[in-house]
Length: 264
Image (tube, rainbow, N blue to C red; front, side):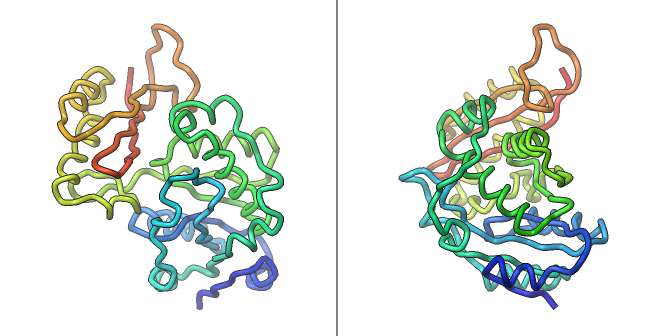
């Protein structure tokens, strides 16, 4: 039976001895989250899923209050998958003294998503580090859809010598190709059709072709489209080999992220 706990003390009591696998989420679970849970379960260790809408990663004016909260429904889905514990703390539990100590992401956290959301990744890294500490996780599972976030978490673990293995899991897409996201529910039917230009652009495997397709899509406002090395370092001039194509775009009021591996 899945235990739902809300405090560090209750979490400690719920965790069995031995290695634990962690799947951090903000709730509003969809098939992409559940794929992460299944991958974690396949490792064979007890699985903890955290559900916490982290205020530290939202800037003023962002959708913190609007972000969907569906705890009962989420727990039901996780119970069906045999998750051992769900940790759903309050902001007061996670930050009893406010954001007093934070983890700064460095230069990689100041570009792309960090350029438009300068405090976002400090909030992400801080809460992830706290979740690692509270759960004592040996393994943690993250989706590749938030690719810059995944790269920064790997960087944090490496730089701070944190004893946790990071597993990046492939993007899960809907039948029409759109990457699954809790924010997709904000799209109207017409906006969703427009948003499908994003996976189509990535499928070209070409930065130039993807840009041409997205620039020609009415109703889609491109924030950025870039090619980086797989670890998100800059590509040397004349580089050939594996790379990552990353895109952020706004359709209506909804900002969407996606990415795909490419060969240069």
